[in-house]
Length: 187
Image 1: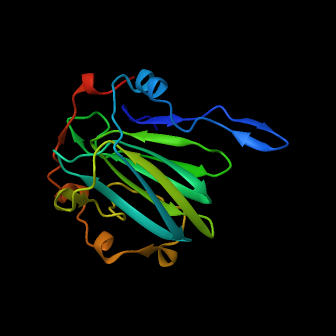
Image 2: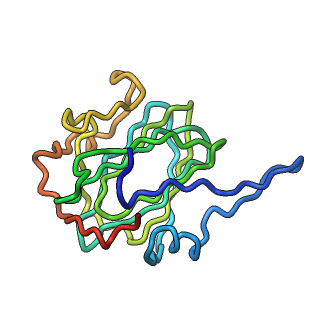
């Protein structure tokens, strides 16, 4: 599914007998693809075991974050949910498997909730943010919201979820603080 503003990034990988090389971030190319300038101010890295589900998270304005996410080791199913009021894809989601082999990245703009589940024995997850973390602005949506219908790819009884992530409300109960403005999102 296509969600306006979300971009799948497939870097050019140059490999030989020694290994490989690729640009994991190029500001000029990113700005050309996204259609605007993001100033990334924080890099985050997490390590998680099989079945760990983190999400669905976002930060409320003025501390909202756009992100570029990728996997350094292992495999995850990465999910972005459109929570922009007035968006033609409000409440829809995109799910992409990110792996250390495929080296795919996803650009997730402000106005989306984000989460992932670890599909491999363990995974190292990396993401760039264009705004710092602000605990008072943190919000989320229930990972098992029936309206969203996300298939996390792992049986429910094998999911490892924090108590905080178990308490998030459904999308229908959320007063989403984002509004869809077509000119804000590239094609």
